[in-house]
Length: 193
Image 1 (tube, helix red, strand yellow):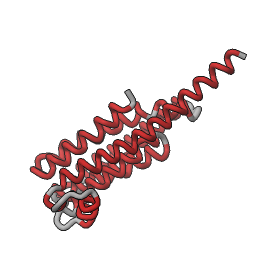
Image 2: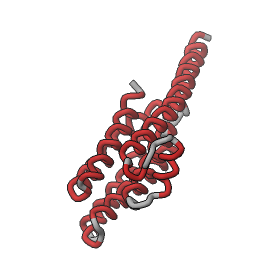
Image 3: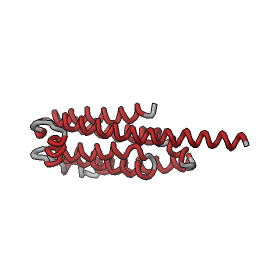
Image 4: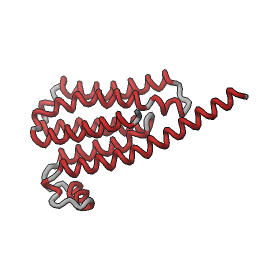
């Protein structure tokens, strides 16, 4: 069950990136909708980590709400204060994904470590959107993966990076599950004494 939210996040990002490659003007709204989806997944998926680390769950929930409300509030301000109108759809989409990547990275470090690879993948996608022509990272990653003409295949390269990020996240999930089972076993032993 812990893998489904991660799978949804990585898959949805690949789909959104693919849609952005086809029609940037029509997809930035989908990215805006995706921000609260990531927030909800972060809140739910970090619940176990709060238990393992003996964190107060009310404090955990309050921190998450403040964290994600600040990011969503910042995006609201960009739109309501006219900054959005000063940017192209490409610039705004890249900025929004960079902010989402930063927010996800901070949530990963502070509250839910398994999102760290997802935040890196978001930053990768933002960079591909911000620098679509002759992107050095796209070329380097594509060449490393043996993809011919990676500049012409950004969706394929980003999908490969998503798979690698998801697999890396699996290791973190398995480590967290091991810690959770050890804690439960320890609590049962303490109750038995």
